[in-house]
Amino acid sequence: AKKTRRGGVKVFQERMLYSRQLHNQMATELRDAIAAGEFTLYYQPVVDLASGEIRGAEVLVRWNHPQRGLVMPDEFIPLAEETGLIIDLGRWILCEAVMTFARWRETVPLSSDFRLRVNVSVAELQRIDLVDYVREVLRDSLIDPAFLVLEITETALVTGGDVETYSLLSLKSLGIGIEIDDFGTGYSSISYLRNLPVSMVKVDRSILSQSSGNISQNEFIAAVIQLIRAAGLDAVFEGIETKVQVERLLEMGCVSGQGYYFSRPVPEAAMLELLRNSVRL
Ligand code: C2E
Ligand code: CA
Ligand code: CA
Ligand code: CA
Image (cartoon, rainbow, N blue to C red; front, side, top):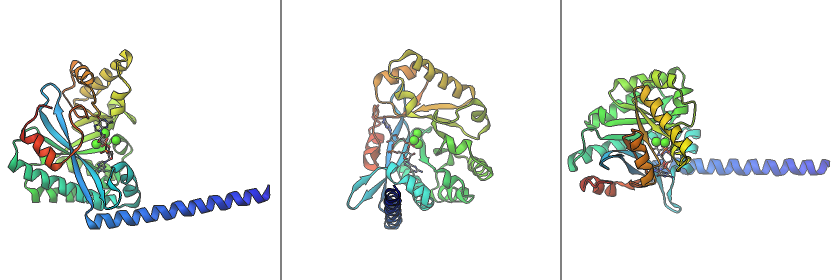
């Protein structure tokens, strides 16, 4: 028995060593990739559900890996957050997104209520210099701050301490919008919806996907919409994949959303094409 146990410990230690090596190797790779500029931004239209008109875009990062091809964010954002590399990556994303948007403004017609939505991790929110960076990017790009919305996850907002609160309030004072992301996966209550300096709520796609056709689930969605509206905020649904879902959301009074039904996230050229043709998605 003793021997087995020792063997077990050894195997365990080897695995730990292996996974730590792999972890370090990936972190190094990620650091080099940021320096080499191997990232690219995709854009997913946010539309007016009734007319199909484009009312904004969510910015979603991808890693253009020289060997592995396009790597999705779920495979590297958690590591970037854990290693702190998200600070540099997040700055690049924000700057690139805002500069790109400044170009769009000169080439395609955009509705005045168009919103560019950029995801921000809690680690970024915890840096008190985030607001200085955002201010700088806005100043350099010359865009009206009202065009920019930062998406921050529900969990990050609710568990936030002093620094997060400071960041949120100062970001808001710049004139940009703050949106709660992944609403419905955490603590979702009306008291915090009322108290946080947020203007929009992005409802997590699990709320919609669990609900196909089921009546009590529809009531659940209606209740979520009511909760958000009672707090005086706008609801945006993500993960809309079918026409039935669009119709149901419209019946329940929800006006905007995004999802594969309208468009998958696309590279800049394709997004420009959608905007240029002002396609009714
Ligand atoms: P998220 O912010 O909740 O983004 C929505 C995700 O849902 C995106 O996945 C999008 O492609 C996907 N999606 C959109 N419509 C549909 C649909 O109709 N059906 C389904 N099944 N999925 C849909 P993606 O691009 O893989 O991003 C995953 C997550 O990675 C994001 O979740 C976000 O948490 C994170 N992420 C992506 N880009 C960034 C970024 O620039 N910065 C930070 N900090 N995080 C990012
Ligand atoms: Ca998001
Ligand atoms: Ca989300
Ligand atoms: Ca998410």
